[in-house]
Length: 111
Length: 210
Length: 186
Image (tube, each protein chain N blue to C red):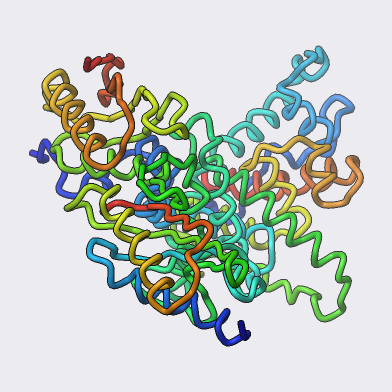
């Protein structure tokens, strides 16, 4: 695994999540450059420069993914949450990589 | 609130001030000022029996009474240099500090760690309340071991109702709507939705929905 | 006759409701609080720190308030609570300036950076406001911390880094000046 892989995946996964039916926002899990922000700012439908939304830890067969999302209230939030999880797993497996050890998806806002 | 003070004009010579006297029965302005701040305890008979000292204390007490008004009127006329002082604040607050506990969402994949936050659930309940005229949700509390899958929970919602609202009816309808929204968006087993009402101007009452 | 149900209930709701919602995480409610009390915090801070620092104190105050709102026991008292927070932030800034002990920080104490000045004070409030601006800064700070923030002598002494006896003297002098102004309006 190259460094380029580690840098690209969070961005890719963020894009994947944004395209999931029912997801309206992907929130930051932590800033890339901690000094840029005093606290983790809520990214509402905009993409602050230097901010990874989805966090990826580990590499190779030991990847752990964490995402915070906001969903529309039309469907049950658990359904959208499961759909978001599946989209992440499908994307990783789809590019030929091993299945992640853990995928954490947290719904932080409904509606 | 500003009342008759606004129509008066200052006397041109300023006039005598109750605090002009250098000494009041041997007490300085400093000690009188201190005496006021100690709420006149313990009572000092020499101060209490001196008309000049009493005069001075009365003036100091008047000044104290007026203090909040001075600041309030300054606030009324305060102008911020630009409008984005508000966005600067809002940009730096983190909603995630209100996230609270993670309420599990089930999935048949063992590597999935899915949840909805307590904060999100509070937002759901607030949104339900926003759909009801004549009331506003104030606080939402979830009691129970909600971090365990399918846990039983008691939801307590504090609401405020406005004049003219049928408190009992709204409380019941709202409670039902909350139960329904939680059933949709969480996998909690909600045993009770307790709606506590602060009726503006009247006493609180509890409406329990079973 | 006013409508029974306000059109924008959050905007018109009392401090208890708005502060409670903000404590629970409602950002819109928090924004209502900021708009409602921001000017008071600014006017108050302006009496303690130099004009250039007021904006930062306002910001620090509300960011801190967001953090601590859930622990506020009486949401209805949020306004006076914000003054308490602003006091802490203002004093922190004074202390930081003192520690820097930079000559450049010498306050061109254009201390009349209170409200806009008109030719003649048209009300008691305005006259007192001006008199407050005219006080030397240590006197003004003592008075504001005592009368607005309700701090005790020792607390003021600790916050300003002065002996208690000095605080007592400054307070007395500030009161003498302000009472003179106030009595002229009776």
